[in-house]
Image 1 (cartoon, helix red, strand yellow):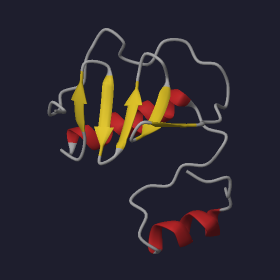
Image 2 (cartoon, helix red, strand yellow; image 1 turned 90 degrees about the vertical axis):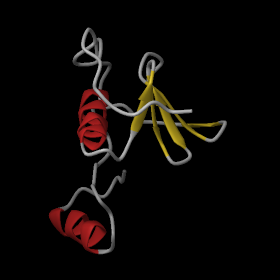
Image 3 (tube, helix red, strand yellow; image 1 turned 45 degrees about the horizontal axis):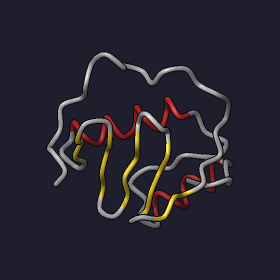
Image 4 (tube, one colour; image 1 turned 60 degrees about the horizontal axis):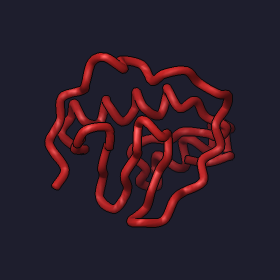
Length: 96
């Protein structure tokens, strides 16, 4: 995630190894959709209302991101209602 939103910044980030590029401010719904997309490809796991990737975990209900036990401050574009697909849970692996 970056505040740099020019096309050349995105291209540079992707060419330097980023798998995805998302600019600030961002929509929580967009972040959620991107994470669900990663789960479909088998790169993430989901347990209850938490999405996990390596040391990161995203609490869907609280809309909070953690790195280990430390909370990561996110800047939201605007207040969003319920996440998309609230009544349908994405398929993924269970975090342990």
